[in-house]
Length: 293
Image (tube, rainbow, N blue to C red):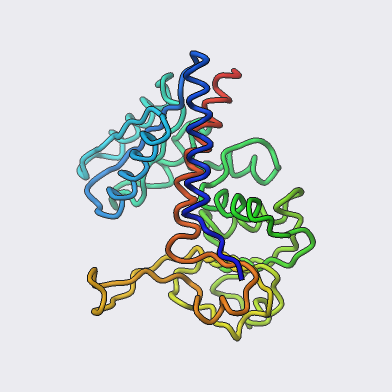
């Protein structure tokens, strides 16, 4: 069993990007500029956005934090999005979710210029991904593909079972794993809450990618020997014995399933750290595309 170490891999990627940024500076080129928009004071969102800004500083990107009050109207936020779209100095930006309930998230995400959508959520970019064209891949699926590639996990001709059909992870993963190339060329089954006899699929899977959000859902008796496990789940579970009062659990019963796995991602330290690294990689791509134009 080999651990797919997202923490180490993400640090490797950041170092690679930092070296490229240094070369850009040496050549007198503009360095990538990423902005993050946050509305309100959601604690988890503030922490996540803060880590993105720190990562930008770490690798030499320019970064801007756009902090807006929770009372902002939808129209005012759309005006801010338009302003960011038209800002020539900005290569890409993200709008941190969730947004306050009085704001239509879909309307905001659709308003983002697809050429600055480094989260990869815009329908234009989703469509380009499905057509195997150059685009910004959704950061978490992009990170999973990068892990599979760097650890040389064989995916061609393998049966991949994806658990969960969200637009952020499950559905894009089903597309990416079936695309031509490496990683890819996999036969994919997309399962979800209405799938009957899920174990019939997981027991026959060579690769399982689970993004369900149910702690330790996938047990050892649901998988075969040699399976590759990608655990995207991340749930806080109350634990009085822990100083924080909780522990982080994935969708997979790690202790049991790891004994049967050839490769497995831990939680935390697996897929999570890769998400920010790939957001940075998308921003670098956005700068390159803009400079080509």
